[in-house]
Image (tube, rainbow, N blue to C red):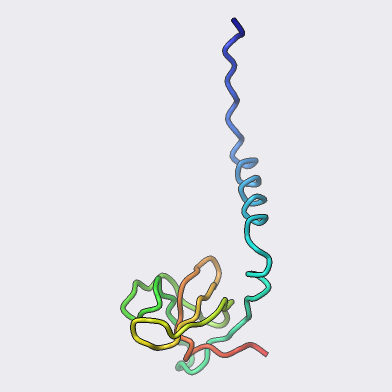
Length: 105
């Protein structure tokens, strides 16, 4: 009977590197290419735009946009019938009102 061999656990740094490499290969490049940079516009100076978990003003606030964010598309197919955009600011991915976002030129 062969000896019982166990596979040694992955080192944490190697596991993280492997996970990051795998995740970047699974993200379609067209999604990243379609993202556009928008800036906060139409709010009083110094006020941040809320990032919500869902495209609804009563949804949980999960972050905020102070200056710029990536926008991945907008829709007005929402409960309030207002236009919301899928945004990414820093590590936060959520929804923000289109009314307060302007394309960065």
